[in-house]
Length: 377
Image (tube, rainbow, N blue to C red; front, side):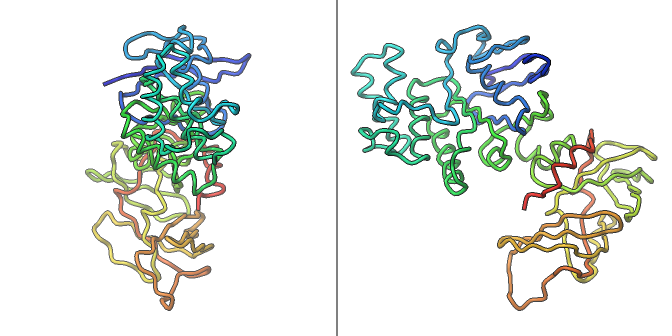
């Protein structure tokens, strides 16, 4: 059931259009992420939802009520900011109780509610400390407890993990997910980190230059990106470009300059001579020294030379030259023997991928390839 809806939101600062006619809806109880690079408009959209900014055009509907022009303190929405915004002179108890006092809740209820939320964020026993006496992860949990204690319909999280180191971010993601499961309210999570969004979200809206590129589940965005921007921004990928040479029932054959022709699943119902851009994820390839057998008539086999190999523990990433194209390949280490014959720099190798694992793009922009200049290892 829908809890929040943005309708045709536009926001400009001078001649700069930060949000351009953005519309999306968010279901009750889900974790919904706004994902995109710096300057894409995601934080501005969050601030409009929280009442800290107003749109030039459009409406914000919360649980059927138009809150577009409602003051921030009157909205049933709370925000956890990137810097946590805790009161340094107050104890943890006082910080969490602040929102309840501000809304006129009686002292007895405050004494009952604050311990519940200290327990929820695993900070029972820390109530008399000041924020400066806590770690970054603990301060974040205080900020979450302070926001949740008022039982809002929606919790807004603006890059809440940005100030934490990698290990702590990974742990806090799990804790955030657990807290969400416990309280069951809607979380809107703003981040530029794809892995954060993918690991915690039910749905993600990918924004670029003030517009929504695509909305979907993490699986839909990764496996079926509509544009080259989404394909490149969500993880890593390989782009191929060519013309359709043949269409055969549910499959087609793509002719690519200085590259072997490849078979693809024809999910877009393309026609002969149509120009086509395709995304293939690195892990969809199998790499081997010896020529593998074809699984079926839609198996693609490519021969190339390893230009780079980087061992990364759980997997090895290869860059393989095939004709004039450089293909990124990931090989998972399901088992690893130190004395086995490893694929290394300069080796001649075979790549294998199935037609169904490539995905045809609706739109492609050469600028989006810049996102692949430094591949995510």
